[in-house]
Image (cartoon, rainbow, N blue to C red; front, side, top):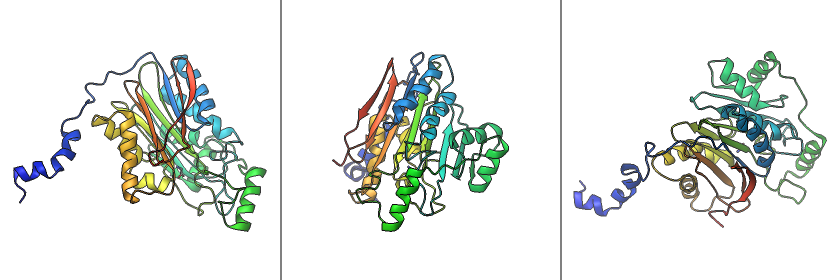
Length: 323
Ligand code: GLY
């Protein structure tokens, strides 16, 4: 049995310090009010933030803002990793994943949804109109159609051409191919009352196996919101995010006293460790705490996030932890 002295010397004690003696507990955090904030992943976040902020500035709710925000890239065929125009799976089907969560802990999600342009609004409907959290595939589509969503072809000519080239070469690493083919948008917002919400939506990994679902529609993986602490969202290789319950972990680390930045970094460290220090994919997290503090971290260089707060909407470069 380990002696008390041995325990103290072993380092186990030190590793428990942050959770036993949090630097800043949820009781210490003062909710930010009156200064709405939106934070979202990648360059498409800039336009998404604008629509979200328009709602917040008028005194609207964070949940309405996050939905409106991510609908922008979902409807834009030039954003090739989300919604309409998103890259298809290996069979040429555009299959979409999304989730949404509000300040009361209510949540909705859809996965493997086809032919519906705005999966985030279907996820919202699941949240508002059913007592379920997640609908998938044909059932999600039937639910959407029943609630008045329109059936549409989401595969644009550009995405189809690219997919055909991939099929001919069976490679996504040629110079014609997508460089980073899963630039999911996660968007977090805090409204004037200080309430939080989050949304996450994607067409997932390009040319994935038909039926593959990533982290984005999974509450706690692609996104998580706890109105007592903060919200977090993910982008990048979904499998690794799911296996570490990524966004939930970021929020729980903030609960233990980490700053949003530290929480994002610590959550990524778990992935780095599991991949023996050398993950061959990109993952990034964004986080927004109830006191208005925000942060982000990425495994590799190239990740940017969009921040809209105090009258400015800017893109911020994140240096990769492994760079
Ligand atoms: N993060 C998006 C996905 O892996 O599907």
